[in-house]
Image (cartoon, rainbow, N blue to C red; front, side, top):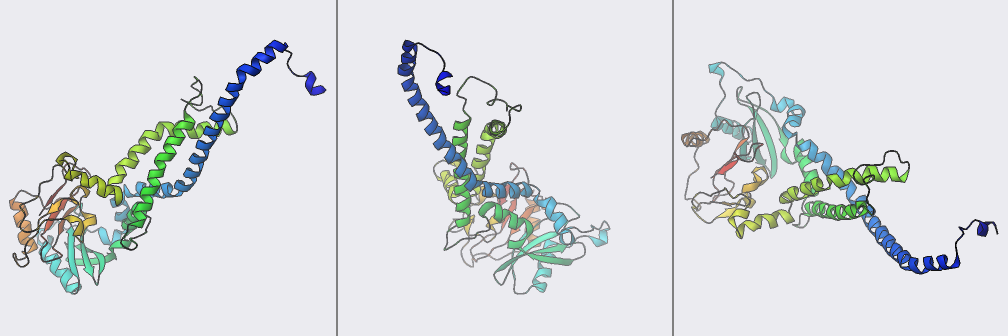
Length: 361
C-alpha cells in the first residue's frame, strides 16, 4: 500500500500512451545493453589474455632502445678499454686480430667482426665454437682478448628474444614463440576495436569522452581514467603494432615477399645487388643473418662457384673498401666472413638512422 501511494500520479490516457510508445524503446534498450555487455566481455577477457605479453613486450622494447648503453655498463670489463694515443701503441689490424682469435680458439670458425662505436670500446668478434656461437671481445691497442660471452645468452640477446619470441625457440621447425607474439598483437587489434566501441559516446557530451570526470567516484571515475586516455592512444598503439610486424616470422615473411610484386614494396627499395657470380640466394641462409640490417635480409646475395675464388686477407679487404671510398672506421660496421664455399664476404653498416645503412658483397 505504501509503495502504490508513492507512484507518480498520471491520467489513464497518459499512462496508456507511455506504455505503447515505450515498448519499442525498451526493446531497443535491451538489445543495446546486450550488445554492449557482449562487447565489454570480449574486451575484458582479451585484455586479461594479452596484458601479460604486452607488459613483457613493453618493458623489453623500452630496454632494447638503450641496448648499447646498458651493455656498455653490464659488460664494462669486456667492452670498455683505455685507448692509446701514442703512435707506437696504435691498434693492431683486423687481420692480426683474426690471427689472435685463431690461436686462442683453433677449432672455432670466425663468423663476423663488428667495429666499435667509439675509440674506448673493444672490437666484437663472433665465432662458432663446437656449434656454439660466442662473442669475443678484443682490445686492439693491447692486442689482448678480454673475454667472451655466449651469443644467445648475451644480455640484450636475451631481451631481444624475450621481446620477439618469449624465449621460445623453434619447435619442430616452427617459430612457435614468434607466432605467439604475433597472435597476441593481432588480438590487441580486437581489444582496440572493442575498446573504441565502449568509449563511443551515446550522448552529446564532452565529460567522459574528451576528458575524464575526475569529480566522480567509484566505477565512473575508473572507467574514465581508463577509457579516455586509451582512446587517444589508440592510433599510436596500432602504429606500434604494424611497425613491429616486419620483424615477425609470419607477417614479416609476407611483407617482405611483397617486393616480388613491386620493387617499390621491396624490403629495401634502394638496395641493388652486385653482379651475380653464381646462383643467387637470400641472406636467410647466412649464419649471422640476425645481425644484418633487416632491410637486406630478404635481398638476394651473390654467391660464387665452389673453388672459383680464393679468400683474401682482412687487411687486403680493408684496403679494397677504403680504395672504394668506404670508411672502415665507422662504428657498428660489420664484416661477415663466408661460412660455406659458395658464400661471399658481406660488409654492412647499420647505424641508428636507416638512411645511411648499406650492405656490400
